Length: 314
Image (cartoon, rainbow, N blue to C red; front, side, top):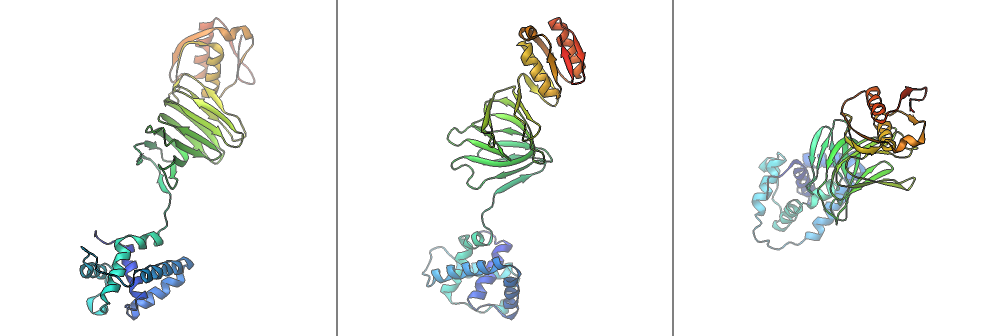
């Protein structure tokens, strides 16, 4: 039996109280504790039922009840003379409640595991989540049994361990991301439901639960939604969003412009639809939007102009 924790010491005192082994000071403490919170009365009732179920108790091989009980007394700081002798069977009952962890189960109901703040969260399935300071992740009870479901807000980079039988599901308000094994970035702001997702490897499915709208993202694909009411905007050929690293290799101008609009948050109008079939091969990193559009205009032998709405290419 390992070193007893403070919560276990409280349980030893409650056991003594129920078995009429507590002195006046201890009984006063328990009576005050019972009045502090209605839930405390339920805890006491649970222990009473457990003790009743354990009477009488037979000999348990390997269980040193005397030393266990002495350690309980030491943990709660009670001097020897203040603790009267208990019947042997009832001492076993009290120690068993602690040794088997039954008391802790009633005192602390199972809760979701929570990760918050800047850290690299190591999950029990082997997945790693590199969380930024604004991030918070709740692992739903039963994580890993049928599926691996978490609730998430903030920004983080996910590296999800592959497990086809137990999909990894990230709940982002009214949106879900389902993956089997991949690396991707999520930036979700619940205050306005804005969402950014960038896939580095593998494949994921993002679903708007309200609109019943889903999109499959593969490496280099970027999804952005500025508000919950807006549809998903999806771009391709994005290597790194922070550095605005874009890599185009014989990509039609239509897709190039779409990527630029999503990454830079601008509107670009193609005046002549025939230009949409022109192809672009170019790499960009940390370039201002004006430089990017000027380069594309040069490659496609077109002209770019600023407009009230954004830009136009003709």
